[in-house]
Length: 477
Image (cartoon, rainbow, N blue to C red):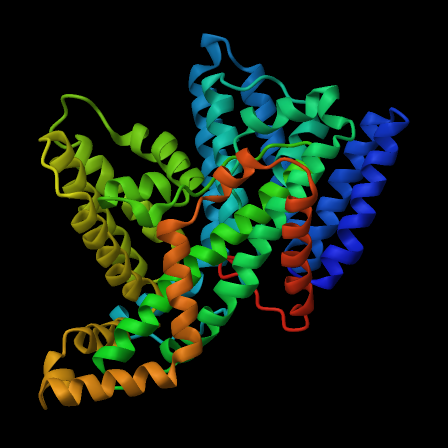
């Protein structure tokens, strides 16, 4: 079930919302939480009915392992606890690996061994990459003794809470469970609800008015990349894709955070104007922040060792981004994308450590250039397509070979042919670099006629276009 649909906004959300607060009004707090868990499970089952039994098995299995780890805290169980934790983590990774990487491994076996093993064509369950990370964090923290013994209901709310279940933000048990334990968060709060609707509407507008049209246009190009790509085409469609990915995921995050406010829960921020970064290290501190937090806490810190030659900061960074690349997709292009980003982050860290600074505007431009160039590898169907796009990007002779007048004529006609989406790209860039962030707008928000009018008009525009539904880019991820 997608947030930006009539079914969700006009049916599912009102039923769950009113049912939850009616139960809370009569102080049936436990029953209201059960209602929210059941609604969240129904929400997930609508998207991945075939995987739903595996999802339930994974959720309850991890709870059983985490509870055992919490009980076995004495030193006498040290080895058993470590073995149990490793087995639990491997079970999660194995489930993710089977559904996400089976065909990738079979393709490579066939390519290197000359075999003809048929591919399984497994449909990727929605949200598996996101909730798997939350379950792994829960197990590792249980092993370290950093979790208290959660009751099953609060644990289920932490994992299944429908706003963040499918595409994040990746939440930590320590920031979600305590909010459901506080009685004040279970009571109707009109200001939080108004804020939630406002933030949800911003996210919906990002998704429908900016991300969807740019994504559809760029995907049409990247799904059938011609052998000969012009310089204008390669830069324009890659720029479109870069912006559409940002507005799609940040739009979903805004909608999730807005829904969280409506149910009295504050979800973590996931974006902080990443395109305004001055190097790639800062970019990944601002982009998909909950993913960076997870990778930093559970991959980087597990590998990094002070004083170790092979486990120093730079090696730990490369390992972390290798994991990030593999997590993002089953393909060698994602591995390469992760390693290149890791290298760029290392360069940024080295310059920062040695206090080497580039003026802000050139630094922002170079960082944006890196974002766009690496996006080619991420979205191309294969490396041959990526190479064709890169060749087009730097084929200056194709644009300027006939002189500046001919180049100006080509640019003029290209702009005319792509005027509508070109304007949308310019609007997107202006928002990325000049507009206040959703967090800033949220902090300034005060329920009143102006904010109500702004929210109402924006939501009405979004509702008028919901006859055409475009899936989130990270939906089956």
